[in-house]
Structure formats: C-alpha cells, structure tokens
Length: 446
Image (cartoon, rainbow, N blue to C red; front, side, top):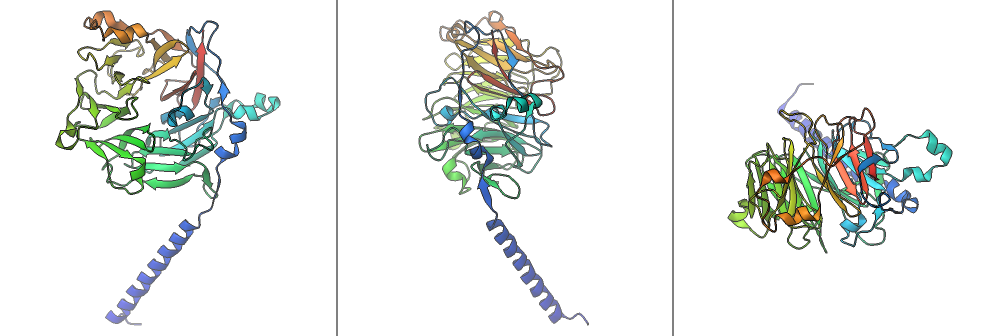
C-alpha cells in the first residue's frame, strides 16, 4: 500500500484516537483503585497509650539508655532525614500528659516513608517476643520522586472520634512538593495510603529542604524552606487548590536549610537558617515588599547554619547550630550575645560535613538539649536550666567565656551503631536513627 497524505491523516487520527482511549483507560484504572482500612487502624484496639513513670528514683537524669527493640526500615530507606513521634496532644492543642507514643514516622532516602508501632511487642506472646529482636514498619511506601524526603509531620485528625491513631500525614521532598496522605486507608495493590493532595511548582521551584507545621483552631499553617532560597507559608485549606503561598520571603540568598514555628498558635514567629550564613526571625504580619526583612537577624553565628529550633512553649528562646562545633541558645529579648553556648558533641576539630540537628528534651524537672555529632558515635546531652533562661533577661550574657558549657552526659548506643542521625522526642522517649536507617528508642536513666 502506497503512503499518501490522506492515509497519513487517517493514521494520525487513528493514533490520536488510540492515545485518547489509552488515557481514558488509565483514568478509569486510577479511579477504580481499591483501598482498604489501614493497618494503623487495624491495630488501634491494642495501641492505647501507656502512662510513663517518672525517670529514675529521684527524677534526676544521668544518661539515656536503649529501651525496647530496634525499629528496622524498609528496603531502600537506609538513611532517615526526618523522624517524629505522634503526639495527639500536640496536634490537637490539648494539655500534654506523661504518656508515651506508640507511633513513629521516618522518611528520607529514595523518597521512602515508614510508620512504626513502637508497642508492637505488646501484641506478641512471651515466646514470640524472645525470638524477635526488631520491629518492622506497619506501613511503608514511596511517597516522593527525587532522591530524598526532607520532613514528615503528623497532622491533627479530621475529627475527634479517634485521636490515639494518626490519620493524616504531610511530607515534603526533593521534588519540590508537599504531599497530604490519608493514613486511615491503604491501597490493595501497593499498600500505600491514599494521596489526598500534592502541591505543584507554585509553592517552590526547587526541592524542599525543611518543613514545619503549626496546628490552629480551624486550620494548619505549613512553613517550608527550599533550595530555591525562599520561605513559604501556606495553609492546609489551600493545598488542594494549588494556589501558591499565603506568605513568602526571599530574605535568604542560598538554600534554606531549616524553618520552624514558635509556640504561639495565633501569630507564630518563624526561625530560619541558611547556607548564606544567616539566621532570621520572621513575622508573617510583615507583608509585601517588606517581607524580605526580619524582626531579628544573626550574621556569622555559625559556619553554614543548618538548624534554628524554638524551645517548646516559648516565643523568645531558640537554639541554632551549623557545620561547626558549637550549639548556641538565644533569647530575642536580649539578642546581643547567645545566652549560653554548648560544645563537646563534636569530638574532632576541622571541617564538618554532616548535619546533626539538635533538639530540646524535657524529662521530669530537667531540661536538656540533645545532639549527635560527627564521628562521636553517641548522643550528647546538655543541661538547660531556668537560671540559664533568665540570664539574658537580666542582661548578664555579655561575657561569653562564662557562658560556655560542655557535655552534661552522653547517651549510650549499642556497639556498631555509628553516629546519631535524626532525632525525635516525646514525653520521656527519645528516638534516634543510626547507620543503616535503623531506629533506636532511648529512655532516661538516673
């Protein structure tokens, strides 16, 4: 058969028709995807919270020790960059109690996500318990394209019928998107939860490196820091519309490595840290062209600062860290010098390459800052007391040499664990990732 212009048109029409039919079939398949009740909700009857006893005989903590079994990651998740306990009181803005959380989410390399039930061992017989030395994820799935997920955050439940089990999750990754997951359902074919929404490039033009979430009465605020050098604040109610950011700042001139909300639920401040050497404190009420300014700024406080974290229940105290050997505690009410500087978590001098994000940890009457350290193979504890917090208020923080503190104690890790990676805290629990992506849960010991 000879090829003619007419036959070519017919072939093009047939080809277009075939493509349309294929697209329609794919859409039907997508619409027909079947979901079941999530394993998280299958376990809910035996996953009630456990009341935690006060650590030690007199409540004075000396160190952290491993408690329970190791949590193992799914295949491919051999580096976890984000770790968080589910805290039903935090996400619902209710008064905290001394209860431990059974649920933990980890996300990181290859765009993978895993959710563990730390109380998994409570559903086995003693004989089975003795044979098991680890806990596998209840759910795991690939959530993002790109090389990694930067952060994963549990969200408040859609209603108050069941707050003991996490039902919503936000993740942000190197593909530049934020994903909203329904953890109450799981695909029959892949086991992944239902993806409710995924943002497009209207939020960020490049990968997201940090995310924080602030639960409010009727909505949730989401702040993200990106490789596109911007900070963006959006709301859960706007994610589905993909209508971009509610507030945006171009203050930084390099990758934004850390963003976090202060404790206020009405007008929280935002702390940011960037590779440009700056740490900024931002107020979302400053809009328009002035949004690139800050209410406070730290210059050259660290080598490539990567962490700016608010003290829980505070709108003035926060810590900072970078690729150097010092962690600094600051008070906005007296910003001339850090309240106190901590050192000793990094054993060797020289150029550092790995990010170790410090975090605050309260247990009993004691308050600490916890941090890993490159080549330290331990979790370092620095004590923070009320006297430290009051120092800057009275203007006595000018002599920095008198405000340098060394390590209070070091948490014990099993041999061969390597360095501590990501950390999460809740009540008297501390979860840390170690080499290979495994997670170890520690508790205080007097």
